[in-house]
Image (cartoon, rainbow, N blue to C red; front, side, top):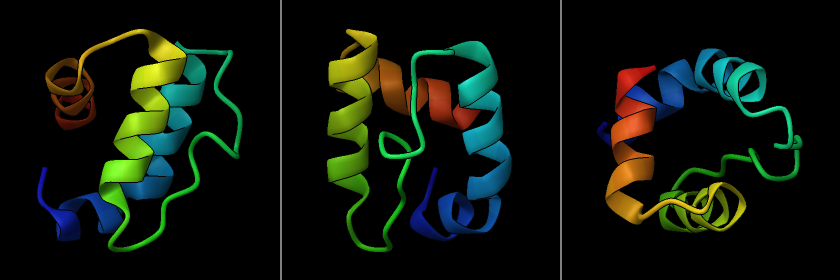
Amino acid sequence: MDKLELKGKWNQVKGKLKEKYGKLTDNDLTYEEGKEDQLIGKLQEKLGKTRDEVVKELRSL
């Protein structure tokens, strides 16, 4: 998912992630432009997945 695609759909993606993974909080899903790596890192830590798995999950939503 490129940066523009992530930015444009983030509210939808965030909602789907919260539905699927109830343990995620708004703080975990705070998106700041230019800080995608930090967001992916937070998700990796919370979900116990690799970077590739997290990116694949984001792209599938």
